[in-house]
Length: 132
View 1 (tube, rainbow, N blue to C red):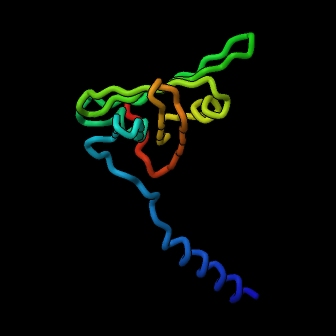
View 2 (view 1 turned 90 degrees about the vertical axis):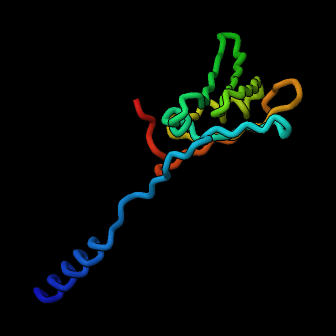
């Protein structure tokens, strides 16, 4: 029994020895991408904040009222200073936008009037946290 426990302990130490650090994605130049022709924009919120060029930005706001009206809007600015935005009062779009965090990836499509048609929010531990 003692030998079996020692064997299991050794196996546990051996398995623990192969643990790896978490995956991390580097900051790249052009973290925010805006395509005016496709009416889309995407990027990592924290990577935009940490970008070396100082221009990139992604921001979203969700608003509500006592009457039950809710709306949301998102803005994007890329490394060249190009600006894009969309807004919506569609409950599904508002719900997606409200979950944005500092390490989220945001992808948005809008129509000719600037109304958000599709918004995807994604978070991943591999993305670099927002720097001060």
